[in-house]
Length: 209
Image (cartoon, rainbow, N blue to C red; front, side, top):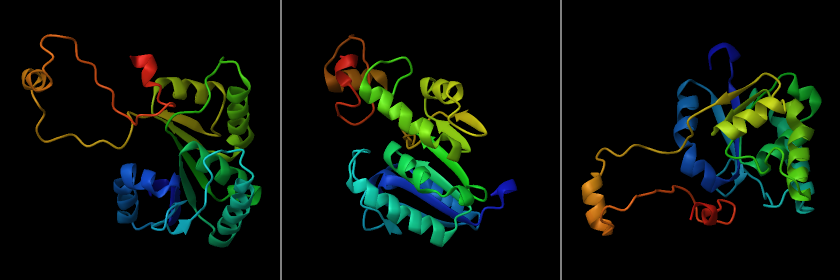
């Protein structure tokens, strides 16, 4: 709350599952300060169930654009907290310039879909999308040093970029000792490497292996 005097916040992501997995504690904290927090995502449990299509360029997202725009105009949020690339792009695109003057926009970047210096149409397209709406973002919060550097160098926020240590994980009360873990996995004295994340082509576990 603090200096922003926020009272009505839109918390958004492409899917309700993402909100439930990573952001419930943050939302509870915001509400604990007396804010009204409404959730926008694809899912019946969201306050605004939006039929986001996973592909940004999908024509169905044109309809989503107008749905979001109507909600933003009608509700008049003091702040918008964005998560996931698709929702972050479409909501900023739909936000009218006149409302941006009174709306604080914070973008949690969980990994840009482009890499600076990488060639290819797909990479160029995603970078173009981010540059197109960067004027409607006040603060970028990144989860790793590479994204922080790109956000800073490409000026992807009007005010500043913030590097965080990530979100969404709780420390276990009891940590399994390394010796016990080695016995359970039957790996002896081999070097152990742990990967935490979904198994998907985008996460590129093949590179790790």
